[in-house]
Image (cartoon, rainbow, N blue to C red; front, side, top):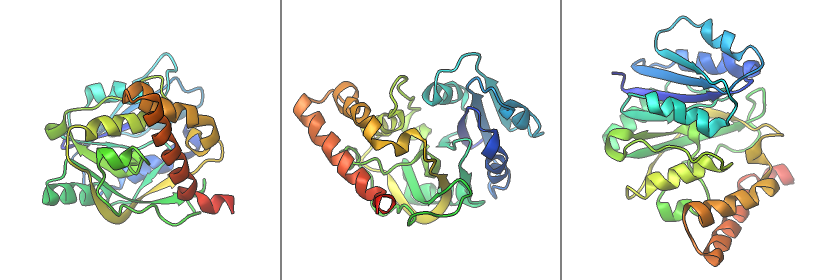
Length: 250
């Protein structure tokens, strides 16, 4: 079995997919499997993936579009690696990402680890200061802001078990990390920039005003908090989110 399972949802990602594939193929650590679930793309994403002749790439083609969380869950079901990590079909890893993360997790005996990542435009040109992995992440501090980004994080499924994404929530990654952190004391930071995140102007994560309700439901429906407690954490999340991207508003 491979040591690492990489989980990727793909939907109409042909514009950036070749760069993402190259970033995985260029990894200095090679004991991985890459589970890609195509979420009913209408472009040539599937053809691009199939053109790569590598048995470590395992493609599942969904016949119905059900969103990124569902696509990730399909891949997670089939994942056999001890270490689970995520890469969306338009993001990018430094060649040493897997090597550095696995070495760090083993040295620190970490169940979850996360690194810095660069916040870039569509051409992968940095637009903001790198997002810093500068503190341990706990269940309590992750309630106020989601410091764990899928593309720069990894967890040890042998110690935590697999954690699936809630389907139907636009904040499914935050719920998933919170559920994982209920099981362990803390996730540990690797203060190196190991990934590049494309900030699309039309992405769900950038339209904060449209997802406040969805964030509230993270606390109310998934964490089972009271209304008052849910509003408190939603307000904290909104304030922290503004400062996270404040330069974009200046």
